[in-house]
Length: 254
Image (cartoon, rainbow, N blue to C red; front, side):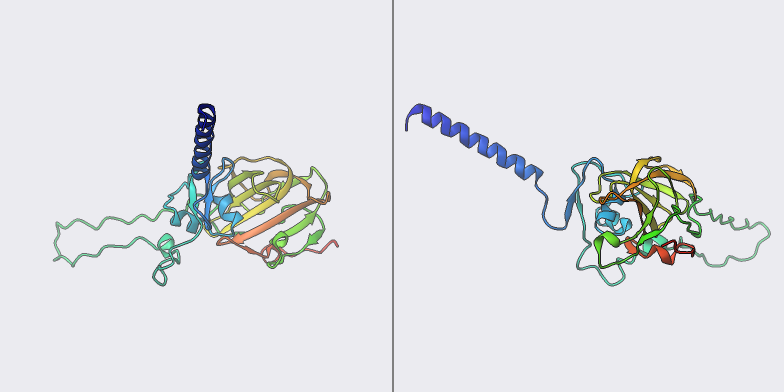
C-alpha cells in the first residue's frame, strides 16, 4: 500500500471512530428510557407517556421541585421485583408518625407536653377542586381512551378568544415541545390532578406561575385541520380521564 493511500485510510478510520463515539455518546440507553430535551419538564415527559409524575420522579431519584436538565436519561419504568404495595405512593401521603413514651409519674413540676402544630396544606390550590369550562363553545369531540387524539375533549371557539384555567393551580409546562399539542399549557391542581390546554395561539403564562380558576392563560388557536378549537384534558394520577365527568353540566351547543 502506498504511503498516501495508507495515510488516507488512517484518516478515514479516525473519522469513523470519532463518529461512532459521538453516536454512542448520544445514543439512548434503550427502550424504556428518555433523554431530556431543553424544552422538557418532568411533568411534560410524564404527560407524553401517560405516567404519574410522582412515579417518574421516584424511579429516577428526583426530589421536589423536580428539576431536570438537558441530556439527562430518565427511566420510564419502575422496579419489576418491587414488593406488593411498595409502589402505591403511600409514603407520599402518610401522616407523620407520633412517638409515644411511657407515662411518667404525676408531678407538679412536670412540664406540659409540647403542642403539636399541624400546618395547612400549601399552596392554597391544594384544596377540593371545583372545575369550570375553559372556553365557551360547542363540543366538537368527546373523550375516548382508545384514540390517542381523543384523550380529552375539543371545544370550538374563535381564534384569539381567552382560554381560562379550569381550576386554580400551578403552571408546570408552557411551551410547544410536545408533538401534536401545539402551544400547550399544563396546570398542576394538586398531587393527583393535572389539566392541559392545547392548540393555543398565544401563551399568557410561564412555568412556575400560580393561576386562579377563570384566569386567562392563553388565547385560542386552531388544530391541524385549521378549525379554531381548544383541546382540553384532565389527568388523574397520570392517566387521561373524561373531562365531562368533572366539568359542570351545560347545554350542548351542537
